[in-house]
Image (cartoon, rainbow, N blue to C red; front, side, top):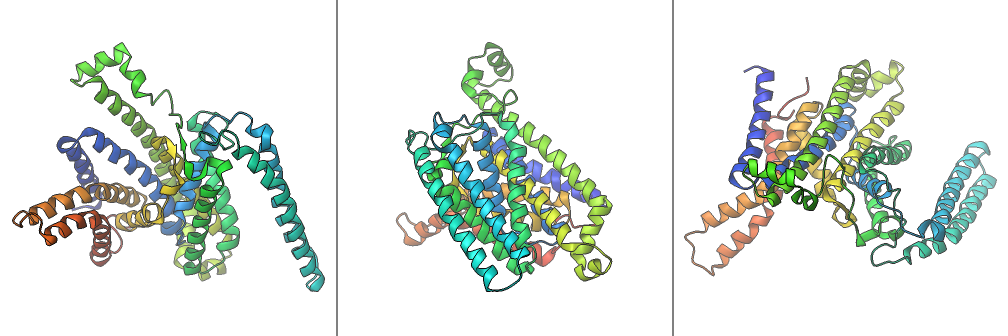
Length: 437
């Protein structure tokens, strides 16, 4: 069987599994799997750029996805009345002073000769800057968080269309990646993994504890939808033309409105995925892509040929992180809320890495295939496991401790299955289902 035919069949199989979900369970469940599969595919492309193209082991995917979600709140939600006049400008001023303190310390370290005087100067700048920063930051934050804390207590956003937040999420993640890359990309691969994991946890901790930014663990609800492509179910159910179309399809207005909203998201997510996939493919086939793979395969030889390895690593680290930020913004838009407490490394880092490895690192289509397959299994394994355990224990008497234990253990089938799939793929197809050419 030729390679293109095999790859096409793999996509057909995964698509058939999603369609089967619609026929056997519900179309709402099938479209939800499709939407999250599209978002996961975009995350996988971002990680594949970093790992498959350049060999960068980024274990901080969760942090960049969370920054994308934060961008949605800062861009698309309405500003909190009185927040900017009450303390917003003071917070911005304090953040600028904090950044200026760091810049001043770096400049002193670069300009002054080594010695005790330089050390005292740097320490003095940092201490004075820290106290000035906190003196301005703390009272202004307290003023913002005191504004109607039951429903607000944060600075709010710019009230722009939510689609503007998707590229903004990419830019916010790219900016954070640039700062991280300037300090961490000089580390060896295993130390880079530890550093990015720690920085991702710091990002989540800031989002959970800085209530003035996005309400912390109190969450932000009611994020607007990307109109006019995606509407609201209540409005659709009151539209006579929509009701007529729903009746023509043999659907009741409630079911039809739910499917219409989810399909609207599917259309937008598919457009973004196709654009990013096309750009990633063009980059892979370009001289830049060939250079990145040469650096990945042999950094020493690439440096000997005059390539700036650190600069190229920084480029692709920023690009991959920006794509993860876009995916994070899309996911928050789909959820309609930002919940920092739900970001965890298992879902937003480990699972994405499984998608890339199973699909085929270094191959963009493999990353997309792996995303759809693994997300489908992640959703469906638990109910399948529960059915399997009920089947196995059908002959056991009710009240049996073993029967109860086996049925209760169905909830852990997800982790077991992900580990099993990873082991099988690494053993029998270590390059993934669609290997790099």
